[in-house]
Amino acid sequence: MEHFQLAEQTILKIKANNITKWTAVQEEAIPAILDGNDVIAQSPTGTGKTLAYVLPLINKVDEQEENPQI
Image (cartoon, rainbow, N blue to C red):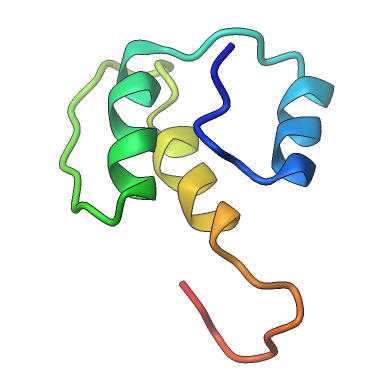
């Protein structure tokens, strides 16, 4: 499973939730969002769209920063 340069804490949470393989929408969206691109994705219900856009955003959060970030 490729981790797309996600933070170690994020990777541990993914593994703790038994996610072992990215879905097609995640494979396409996660790296694009991590690179700062805007993404519009269409995929059937249950294919992981929410995780596809939330993971890269969470990955960018600085826990030391007290102001809104994303």
